[in-house]
View (cartoon, rainbow, N blue to C red):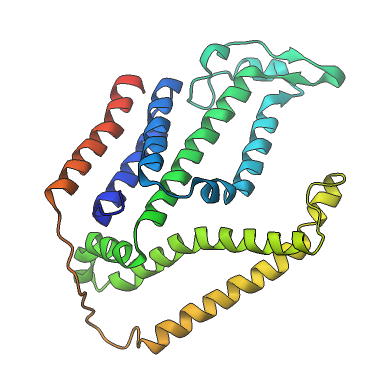
Length: 268
């Protein structure tokens, strides 16, 4: 997983993303989710760190599920069960359940929203897998290799590749720094799980301000390091180790593409 060619990882990431948005059944999504889980297990990456870094995403998923699970107008919703283009599983066609105050619980809406959440979660985990298991220099070289034909149109390929790579690597680093700031505030007596909703949200204010300051400092250090290395002063950039596709990489690419395509054709 870690020694695989960066170009192979990028192609498989794109293929998996497309497959995740093509499949519309829980069986197909389950197969792709199992593939992502297997890849994470093989990589032996720190799963605890990766899962904790997605806590804000869990909150957004929970909000999406709640919003799509209740309605005040079940009559209008009854004619829109097919909206969404994804399967509701055994809850397809289930009638809304009346609650108090005119509210209705919609089983199909809840299952469909879970489908979208699992789909996006798989995509995010796959992106983190590529980011954590591939050095930034290899990612830059791989992206630049794919965009190399655009150089004939005077497109700054190397600059674009470096920008994408920095953005890709900055996401997990930003979440790690967020956890560090949170632990530092907890050591000072901050309580994030005590009190009502307003108090819990307000408790994050001492975390977000130093976290943003830390992000700006990191960006400034990166810019200084690039200036010191005279980045952008030369028109031609060279690389020490040229990319070469090994037979093992070709095998991984073939198997990975097959795994992404088959669920779409057989279970989509």
